[in-house]
Image (tube, rainbow, N blue to C red; front, side, top):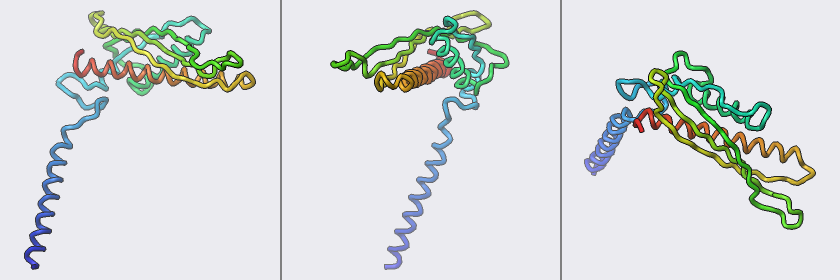
Length: 188
């Protein structure tokens, strides 16, 4: 009887050893997409993203789009290289934006909107600086809804609108980063 119990614990030990060995072997296969380790003989995705120059995004001065343009550029700079400008840029990212606002739910008694959608559309072009060749030309968008609390709470409405715009900026910046990372990894 003691021989059977000994074989059972030995079997569990062998299974545990196999699981740990397989885990260690496969653990080295994974690498974060935006890490600084190189994925090939070229450069890492994080290194290539940090070599992108982002000029000011054009928008009429003093408009709501001017604030969004600055916020989007700042979000892209942060996503690409932690907020700083590239030391020796090899790419230039040109971005243009437009916004939309749609009323979705209307109160039947007052005729005022209760819920609105704020939208941000962005077109972007990645240009290789050395050759002036366009390597990526794409567009993205983001939509965020917000509730309008009523006519007597105008500051709450303004804050909800601005928060929706900020959510759109964050999402568009992530979409652009992911699209460019896809280009640097797959070349498409």
